[in-house]
Amino acid sequence: MNAGAIELDDVSKFYGDVLGVNRVHLSIPTGVTSLVGPNGSGKTTLMNLITGLIRPTRGQVRVLGLSPAKHPDILRKIGYCTQFDAFPKGLTGYQFVYWFLRLHGFPRAEANALTRQALERTGMREAADRHVASYSKGMRQRVKLAQAIAHNPSVLVLDEPLNGLDPMARAETIALFREWAGEGRFVLVSSHILHEVDRISDQVILLSHGYVVAEGQIQGVRSEVKDHPIQVLVRCDQPGLLASRLFEQDHVVEARIHEDGKGLLIRTRDADRLYLLLNRVVLELGLEVESVAPADEDVNSVYQYLIGAEGGTA
Image (cartoon, rainbow, N blue to C red; front, side):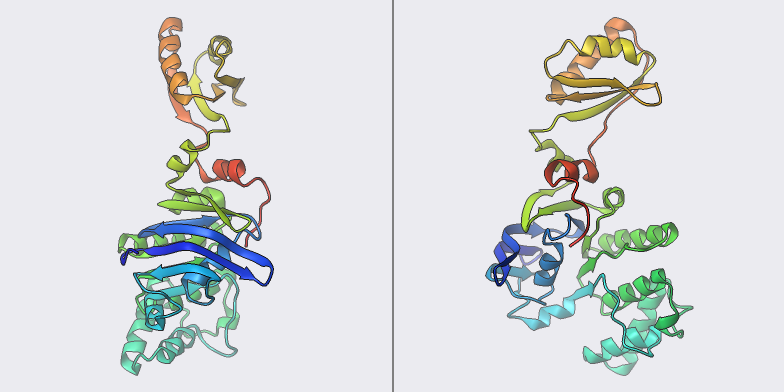
């Protein structure tokens, strides 16, 4: 086990006869790691295992070299933000963060300083003395994030932290994730907003029905999908002429004019052969090419390939 990582070694969790996750092997490095999967895929179970809220039925979970179940002290290095609101009644934003620090054992002066710092970093300083009940959805998400980071944890586990946020709040929250990752923290994010997963993630973990079906950097994951043609978008001055030449190749599954009429969307079983062919054909035909780029090296495409369009969150 690596003391500088989050490790899951042959981990399974069953709730009676119901499968949570099964035979999970993962080593999660620092940076932003996104968990992606449809409803019931095991994302929340995985997060609860890492935070020590539940114990595995089989296998070992280690965070920074220690088991959360056997070494409760490691929980001081973990910050957890759930997707559900559960605020004690009558508290202000400041009190919500401060009193949980006090329950952790921090002395008054230190808890006060850490609370002020966390609220400042999450943009909640001006609303700190307002009751949480008066907060908007975005403000409630921010104060939960403030509580998660107030004790300066090395590991942040954030379950659907972007859910329900307006575009401005999402952009600011994503910037926080990148900032925390830049500080060398582990930032584990569960999200179903796939186009934003691309923006925030250093790596992704794709889950389906309790199993990890792929993990790593998204481009690497996509390159391992052998059963599905790769899509390439070529923007050029004569897409129809280019299509007529490409149709002759057995590895080209489809070639169709882009909806804007200024490009050609090509599906191929062999990207390397396609790129070599494009070089030759473009020179032969004298085409003016603006760009050649993969059209599906993103989380949404890989999600559809490996999991299917089931949607939802766990």
